[in-house]
View 1 (cartoon, rainbow, N blue to C red):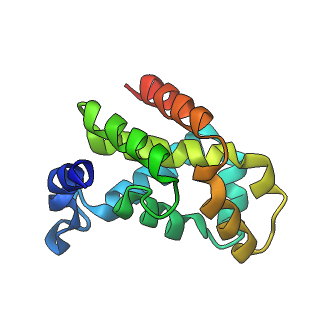
View 2 (cartoon, rainbow, N blue to C red):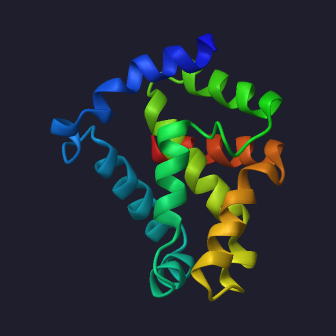
Amino acid sequence: FWCFSQLMNDIKPGFMSEMDNSAGGIYSVVNSFERLLRRYDMELARHLHRCGSPQVVLVFRWITLLFAQDADMGDLLRLWDAFIADPKRYNLVVHACLAATLASREELLSQEDDFAIAEVLRKAPRKDFELLLRRTWAICALER
């Protein structure tokens, strides 16, 4: 509870409607995910765009709920601890979203239906949590 409260307090300004389209607003954060996805895997980004970009809904959910509905409690606490430990907390959330998406790359590319893609993404954070953390930190290191 305290980890989540601290994170929400830190990112609260990004949820204010007047900040929606600002550099720190929620839409800007989702757009930064899409830019990163295009840079790291253009083929996957194109495929998801062709299928109606269902990842935007899941990424929005991951960002706003900090993975609270999509990861097991033990893994979730480790992820929140990583967000709190990182000096650029909210950037790490975007990196975690990208890591979760890339972890399901092959499965996503094999799907054409937007509902099926959304289901793959919904399960992505629960796949291999250790790999998710390692990929998140690797992306973080490359981006800084």
